[in-house]
Length: 92
Image 1 (cartoon, rainbow, N blue to C red):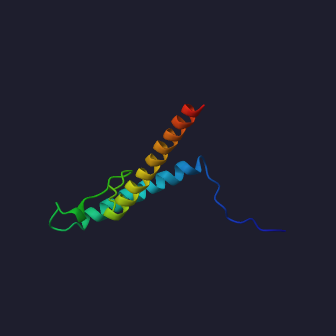
Image 2: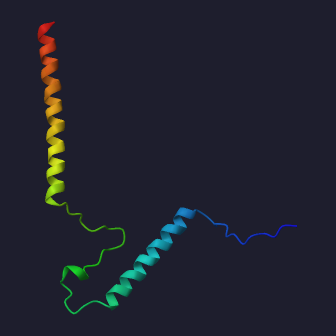
Image 3: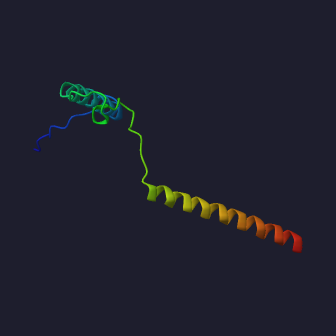
């Protein structure tokens, strides 16, 4: 005879339970961080991220240039295809 393993069966939507646990942990973290806040509350290091809101992402200058170059390349391709279509229409 085999023994049953102690496996917890979820009593509802597992995703909702996980989201609730994550929200609880986020609130606990904010409370813990606020109790150990430094003396200068206006510094960037002490700004808290509210639950569900991510900090602003900042791109490096090199990344911005790479994205801009890729966009210029895409637009050049569009213009090139448009000119080719116009030439093809004129030759017919």
